[in-house]
Image 1 (cartoon, rainbow, N blue to C red):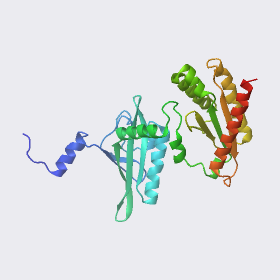
Image 2 (image 1 turned 135 degrees about the horizontal axis):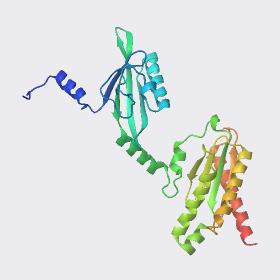
Image 3 (image 1 turned 135 degrees about the vertical axis):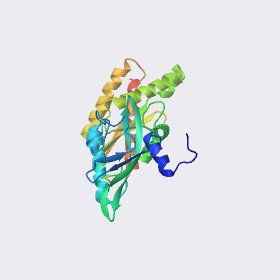
Image 4 (image 1 turned 120 degrees about the vertical axis):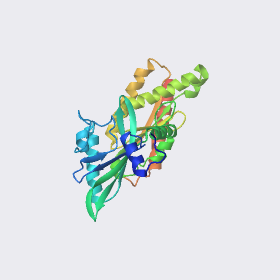
Length: 287
């Protein structure tokens, strides 16, 4: 017979038993070992017995780095007495999912007895956030960053120096659009971005600065390294010219070696040098 009324304790017991609480609640002892969890996700390796009780995150997380990070967070939470909060990415059967994890130290009569926390599924929220960031900071045609990203990111720090700024421009784009149509012009712009992405170091940044202008920012890149990058870009141009005969990218650079150099002035100098290269290459076309 179904009861008409249930106590709060009965409701919670039933919810725990049947995993009907939206969040996962957990508790750990002072050795960072699980002593309670309301649910074990498939993201966690509970072993043959499908249990994480008595184990630390370093033993149950499928990603060792993630397990170590959570373990260190537990230690930090207990040492500082402050709440710890993070968002983490997991791979679940080929899909990427996100979890928000918050944990607090727990005290009894002033003595630390462990950590209590909650895990929330924020996959939908993080997916929307990433989609928003993609629309906000990425150029849809080329897939590189747009100018909004430059306004967000701070390159004005010693750890970036020496920092190379390379300005590039698609020569004769208007003529290409007039002769072959804007579709051909779009291909020209995309292929130019492709060359830059091909030669750019892992920590380099490519920004679509304007319609057919691109700015490359490469941290910890001195003049010699910058020149080598430009040589690689020129080589890639020669290869692409076999497919796109009208491709001709003008390139100019400037290296910032100290913070006394104003970043805006450094970019202007790179832009000026790029226009000098543009004039030089156009003059060669008439020879």
